[in-house]
Structure formats: C-alpha cells, structure tokens
Length: 415
Image (cartoon, rainbow, N blue to C red):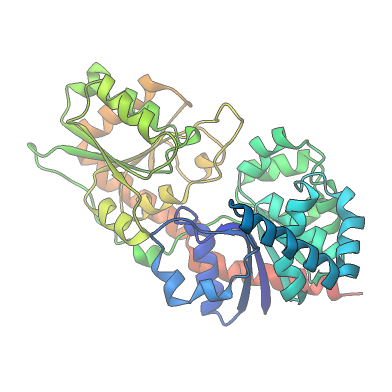
C-alpha cells in the first residue's frame, strides 16, 4: 500500500510509537510518504530513522525565517505558490471555513505546500493526532490528495486541544473520515461523547517492539541501593515533581533509594531547583535526553519504574505512555497513577501499583512497599511482561493496523 503519513514534528525522540508503526509498515513492504508540519530539532535520532532513511521520505513545508531577507524570500515563495497552484489554492480557501481547528490561513497554506507538490492518490491517508487528521481531511476535501482517511487519537488532541478549539472542532473530520483509532478505551468513550460514530471507532493500542527489551527478573543485594527510574519529557503532565516530593517523605528518606530521571523539557530548571530545595541532590540524578537504545540500557540497570502522570493545568493528558510498556517488558515493577488509559496497561497490585494523581503520600507508600518487598519483584515483573506481550506488542499491533487499513480501503471502494 501507498501510505501518506501526517504528523507534527518529525523525527521526534519521544514519539517512538510513531516510529514503531513506520518501522513495522515498511518491513511489511508498504511505501510511506511523510508530511510533517516541521522538521525535528533534536540532535539525537533513533536508529530506525537512519536505517530506513526516513528523512528522504519526508516532505517538509518551508519555515518562516527571522531575518528581513529571509522573510521577503518566504513571502515571495508564498505568492509563487498561490500563482502556480491557483486552482488548488482556491479550493483550499473555499473549504477552509469548515475546519475551525486549523490555524490561520497563511499558516495553513504554508503547511499545504508539500501536499500541493507531492499529493495525489494514496491507498491510505494516515494521521497521528486529531489536528493532523483535520489537515488531511481538509486536503482531501480540496482534491489535493485522495484515499481513505484513518486518524489516531492519543490524548492531547482530546484534552487540552479542546480548550484551545472547541468540542465541535472534529465534526467535519468525524463525517469525512473513514476510521478513527483511539489508543485506549478511555479515549474511545471521549470520542463517542464528542459525536464520533461508533461504527467508525476501533481501539488500537500503540505498542513496543518487545524483542528490543530483554526481560530480567529483578533483585538486589541488601546493601545495594534501590534504583528508581523515570523516562519522560519534563512537562507538567508527566508529574515528575510528585515523584521527587515522594522521595522527600520520611518513610522513603529512611530507605536507600536513588532516583534517575531521563529526559529534558521546559520544567528541567524548576525540577532541579526542587531537588536542591529538598536536599535530595545525592539521591536524584538528571540524565538528559537518551535514544531508545540508551533508554533500554538504563532500564536494564534499574529496579523500579515510576510514571506519576497527572492532568496539567491546561487540561493536557497522556495516552498510555509507551515508556511504561518498555519498563514492564524488561521486568520492572512499575508505579503510576489512575490517569487516562494507564489502568488498561497496569493491573494494580498485579503488574505494579496505581495511585491517585498528585498523591505524594500514595506514591511514597508505593515506593516504600516495593522497596522493602524485594521478593515480590520477580512475580510483578513477570506479570507486566506477559501483559505487554499479550496486548501491546508492536509486531502483533502492526499486523492488526495493516488489516484495519485494508478494511478502510474496502469500505471506501465498496458500492
């Protein structure tokens, strides 16, 4: 199949779930053309980006530059674009009013340039996140691109994004799209509440390549510190603040626990200051951004994993964090929160511990209980690995995605 993929920034280290799907679809012989909104900005990229030469498959829009000369060139380019594709641009303009969730006209036209140049007929139009589904639907309405439209909804697009837009932002997409794939039952219910037809919905988890994560039954010696680890972009919804505060509780301070934090983000400075304020510098380490291969190595040396996710002040929420799947696949007992679809992955008391959002005392108790009950780690770890293998294995999920694409194609071509 020829697949057009619509994403935001590409490549992006934190979005391994998208890369896993690309990897799986390419390995199955499909052809993928990528239409990102912008190029990646990180110096590190995953091996699959290089192995499949994915940058060569990307068609990026031109970026509005900063200097006067660059701005002049940018606007001249826009004028040429309007002249060269006058009829198509007119159709885009005519359909623009149907899509309130797409930003201003000039931004939208700029992002449309790659589709104007490289659009046409595809077997599947595949969008990750609702706003990119809107883009793909708009292009198809204007005749720039064609094919059945399949959109994945993750979390941000059904939480904080709805505060920026409104609850009717997806109405046109729901009527125009062919298949919608919420990554959890939690978000399936939200989509139905927004008016998405039930017959167009299929829960489809994002998953991980379980073969990349070697299972090891966890244990430690009496004198060895318990290594607690998080892998997260340092933003509010990841809840790292509450894990740090939990370490400062007396019932955890009395234990030999060291917390390693992988990731970077806008809250990096404030979280480092929090560690200093709580005098935890000798118990908390910030490791910065790591590739998936480096993360796997770090996980192999840890004892417990913590993902204290919360709903941010803006309303932003998680989907089901893939890093939780990765941790469970390696045999790590996990601690997380009753947030979004996490309970669909972590069975409380079986493969880990779940507490309420922002419950510092609950997190501290979970850390304490797991730290002192080392004998429970092998059983909890084995249960977590089994759950991921059964329901979140990217190999199985990518085969299912292939079948979902085929059903979307058949549904659109049948009389």
